[in-house]
Image (cartoon, rainbow, N blue to C red; front, top):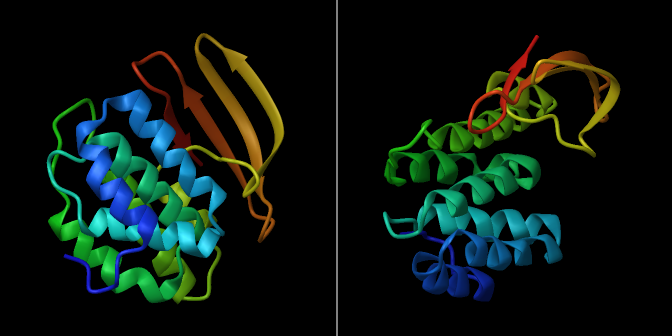
Length: 172
């Protein structure tokens, strides 16, 4: 369990998420968006620290993304410890890759680097406002985008392949 005190929204998420199906889970998780970014990342990290098999993959993915986007370098050790305890879920892919992406982002911050490389390293979506789309071309379920990090200015080529059950991103 987490060594940090549980925030009221965390207590509610931990109590309600395991009993909810996907759509109601997402409705509850949207409450993270109304919190200030630092607080939302802290709540998300505490949910990850307290996850069990009943919590569900969507909750883990959303919380990992929140920590990736808004977490602080000082939360790295807690996130790494949580990664060791989060349950494995079967499915089309190992969702814990999202937690690995959050770890990579916090590692980049700890090294005083931009967290954009963590998105590239984990082949996740180039989400605004962190990335600005410069151009896009589509053919046969594949979109090739040129994007730029809004923070450091580095440019990337990203392929989004929608031919499978979920989009697959490849960064160059």
